[in-house]
Structures are given as structure tokens and as C-alpha cells.
Length: 446
Image 1 (cartoon, one colour):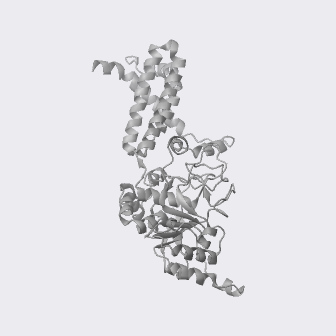
Image 2 (spheres, one colour):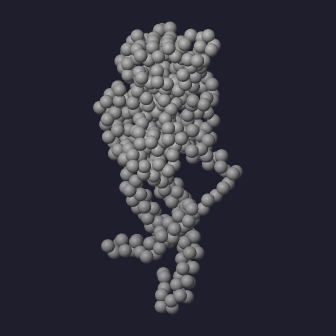
Image 3 (tube, one colour):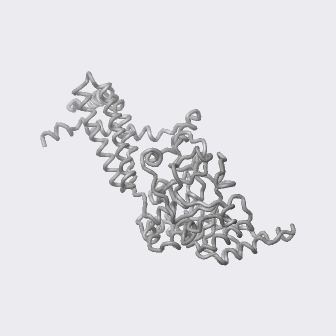
């Protein structure tokens, strides 16, 4: 106890309170620096755990239960022919990330073209476990729900399960896709996310296990009750995508991000002609969508692409790296393989961060008083070493246990601690002693 009393004394408590108060005040100052804004936006898309994807982990084994099928620029008749070819080999589930929201019968009639909607309808009628895209429209800030839902036209919808394809991206110029919401509500009607519906048709048990996770149940309850929380609170209930990988059709055949395909793939030409290996389709999940003009597309920019943690150019990213349909495939793979990302309980995370901060105040105060001659250099070395160690721990937790540990608060605290501690001992503490002395002749603060 005597040892603790020497270390944890009034001076340490006041010093810690001063530093926390000052950091809180600084965090509430709004700066509008247009010069550094682009840099801030670029770095804002990066998280330390991205290093696990891009530099540390070995490529996971490809998920052979999922086959990506590129539709290229096929029209509805072409998609019908492609689907008919796939159906010959009896896929287990077929998901099509294409929006069939408009009836084109009159267009075909006016232009003397064969009614491709009829061809597509017939192909849909012969497809088992079909999932078609819907889209949530007009988010209502008051209720936290959506006001409307765009659906496939009735002649298509009757053969399919509808599922929304809206994805969540970072609110900046870089469309980074990290989080998902497995459900959402349109005027009290619950809608299910595209990959979740595909997973449920393939494995009801594994999808139920995913949906039974506590955060998903809390999310459903909040949405149903129209409970509006702060953005940070709502984000804690979103699922983090654990990315298995990409498919190597981006940036040409030699300049790509991955070493191997994460999923099977079929291009539309070989699909229509039937030149693909039937084993890629038999009993598999086939997800159809746009993945470039051809599967070997080398276009650098496309509105259907997103940034993901797999992108090695994490600062100032120049080009997005993954098509939306491949993002969906990664989510399906995560659900079926149960590779969920866990987040350390926020309360535990908060307590751990507070303890780290207090221990560092004690350590830095000891160095400041006991090793004054070495203070400038030693404080920098300690801070740098601790920050690296904390990030190392967060990387280990994510790589081996898929647990996200937020150490950013501790890192920021340690980064500022040296200067703030000097400010306290050289200016704030003498000023406080002087003030207390003036206010109360009997009082003193050592």
C-alpha cells in the first residue's frame, strides 16, 4: 500500500485530470483546413487492421462453393441465355445483382425487337432459389427507416426472392466498404440484405447462427422500435466484413492485388457458349453481376467498384479495387464459413484505454522527475515504442482471432502525453499553486 501511495498521489491524479481535460477540449475544436482536407480524407479511409489483409496474412483458401459470373454488357436477352446455360448444371442458388425495375415490353414492341423480357421471365421461371436485387430508397432521418423500396417488375418478381443491394460506404470521396447491415426497414417492413438471403437459401442453419448474433438482434430491435442513436453507437451494431479476397481481373493480368482468385469465376462468353467446367456450377452458389466488359477487364475506374481493406494503396488511393458483386460474395463466404469479425466490448475497451492512459501518466511523471537529463529523448522513445506495441497487439488480435481492438485513443493520448505533461509541470501546476495560495493562505498544493 505504501508503494501505491507513493505512485498514486494527489499530484498524479490532478495531472491526469488536467491532461484528460485538455485533450477533451482540443478534440472539440473544429478546424476547417482546406489545405490538409484531401490528406485527411485519404488517411481517414485507412485502418491499421488493413495491414493484415495487405501485408501480414497468407491468402485464405479460395471458397469453391461460390462462383462469380460476369454479365459484362449483356442485355436482358443475353442474361436469359447465360442463365439458361447455367441452369443446365443445376446451381444450388442463383443471385443476380442487376436491377430489373423497368418493364421494357413497349420499348421492344416500338422498335420491332424480340421481347427480351419474355425470354428473361422464362429463364427466371426455370431457376431454382433465385435472388433478385431490390433497392432501399429515401432514408428517413426521423424514423431511421426507409420510405420506399424499388423492386423488380412483377413478372420477374414472382419467381424470385427479393433482397436489397444497398451497401454502406465511408462518408467521404473514397467509397470504402467495411460494414454491412444484414437487415433494414421500409416503413416497418423488414427487408433482408442480398448476401444474407443467398446464404439462407444455401444453408439456413449457418445463416440463422449469423442472424442470432447479439449485435444483429439489437440492430433489429432498434430499427423496429425506430430508436435513433448517435452515428458511433449505431455503427457498433453493424457487422464488419471479413474479406476472403478478390478475383484477379483488375488492373490487367499482372498488376493485381491478390495472388489468387478467392472464388470461382466464369465470363459471360464462356457461360453462354457452355465452355466452362460444369463443376463450377453444379450445386454451387452462382452470383451474377457486372465485373467489367470482360472478366479480364483492365479499366482503372468504374462506378460499380468500391475501395476495400484489400487495397494496398491505403493512403491517397487512386483506384477502387473491388466490384460490388464481389463484395457480396465475400459477405456470403463470411456467413457460410462463420468467419465473423468480433469487436471488443466497448465498455471493456474503454476501461482498458483508461488504465493504459493512467499508467502512462505515472510512467512519464517518473521519467520527468527521476531522469530529467534524459527526458526529451527517453519520452519520445517510450511513446514510440508503446504506440508500435499497441498497434502490434491490435494486428495480432485481428489476424489470429478476428477481433477488432480499438487502441486509437491510447495511441493519441501517448502521442500527446509528453508535451502535455511538460505543460502541466512547468506552467499549469505552478499557476495552480499560486492561485490556491492567493485564495487561501492556509491552503497549499505541492
